[in-house]
Every structure is written in C-alpha cells, then in structure tokens.
Length: 337
Image (cartoon, rainbow, N blue to C red; front, side, top):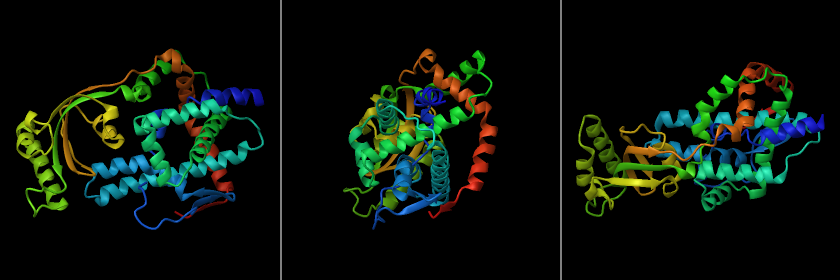
C-alpha cells in the first residue's frame, strides 16, 4: 500500500498545474500586524492568517491593478478569493489528518521543483520579489516549502483515494491537454508588443493635479478610446513616459520585464482591445496589446501522467465532493477570519 501511494505522490508532484495555483493570494499589511494570528482551526490544527495572506498576495495585486478605485466589484472578487483560499486550507488540513497514519513522503527535490515552478508562474521567476512577499507575509522559505509539501500530499491522497476511476481514453487525454497546455507553458518565454498611455499620479507641470484627478483623466481617455479615438494620437498628447513620441509603442517586451500583476493582466487581455486604466505605484496605465507570443508549452509526452490524472479527477469530481463533504461534517472547524 505504501509503495502504491508513494508512486501516486510522485505523479501528484506534477499535478499542481498553473490553473490550480493562480487564483490564490492578500495585500501586504498597511498597519499594525497580528503576529501568529489564527484564521481557522481544524481538529485543533491551526491555519494562520500569514498562510492565507501569502496565498492571496498575487491575486490581490492583480485586483488592485485592475480596480484603481477599489469599490464593490473589487471587494466582491477579493472576498470570493479569500473565502476560497480559507476553504482550500481547511480541506487540506482535513485530508492531512487522514494521511498521518500512512507514513508516505515526498522527496525534497520534487518539492523544490514545485516551489521553483510557482515562483516562475506567479512572480515571473523573480526570486527577490518572491522572497519579499514571503517576508511581508511573515513566512520563511521553510514554511512555504511545508505549505507546498502539504498541498502535494493532499493531491496525492486524493489521487490514491480515487485510483479506481475509469482509465482516461486517448481522446480525453488529448482534449484535456489542448485545453490547458497554454497554462503549462514556460511563461518566462512570453513576449508582447503593445501601445501604452501612462498618466502619472502627480504631474509636476500641473500642481493642482492629484491622484484622483489623474485617474479621472485616465478614465476619460479610456472612454475616448472606446468611442473610437486613435490610441497613438492620445499617447502622443497625454502619455508621460519615454515612448509617448512613438504613440506609446513598445515592441517585443519580455514578460520578465513587467511586474507579475501587470503581466498577468495584459497577457490575458484580447489583442486589439484596450485594457485599463490599471493602477501601478507611479500612476495609471492604458494598454493596447498588439501582438502576444507565448512561451513554449511542454509536449504531451512530458506531461502525460499529469494530464491523465486531471482527467481522472474530473471523472471523480462528484464522488470527491461527497467524500470531502462527509469529512467536513465530522471535523471540528472554527473559521475566524
């Protein structure tokens, strides 16, 4: 039994696809911070607010960029993401409690590979930014590796629990691969050409300008563009960066040259459609993607085990929900956040 589960866990190491890891993370604290505060308890085991905070950080940054005025939609999206993260951590602990008696393990180098993948996917491979976010969330690298190990254990446990699922058919494997291969790509190879209008939060040439009036200007420009105005001409007139004279044109920009939150937004934006205004630390940005070239996706042969496991999970999703719901009802759960 242990050998079988260990093999399953090795497969599960590859299961943490980008689609599973993107939607999870909160803001760096702006005021006094509760140290070691509790977000939830499951059967006596503690889930800390620091864990929740770190998992929410990338999505918070992306939402903050998308919604400069915050507002109800921002709050709705963020609260939905936060609730999802807490539920994921609760379910993870429930499954870990069941796993304790099995005694299997994941090899350290597999955990290291997954940490590197997440760093690449969420932070454009920028280890400095990754470690800064760890520090802001008061997590150590060892603590993050443990979180990663637990997630991989949970996926292995789920795979073992439903190992009797019908085997994936070749057409099902190919279809699943076609659907998600772009999310499995090496995003550090992404390149984009776009036009950009940058409106600074303050304007030295206009002492009366405030961040609010500058945002209003950016919103007005977005409306003009929606009504058919020429992007390049507006960029020449209003943009305040080094590319204004070229109509805001920037060509063949590597994803790694952009902040992770902006890259996540504009690489998912439709080519030819204006996105923004987006918030960054210096001001507000409107972007018109012109051409996007994605990094290479791994061949099916390299990720077949992971794709087959995803197909099995889909086939057993209803069964899994019944299984985990039964365990939620038996568990002692106290969500405080």
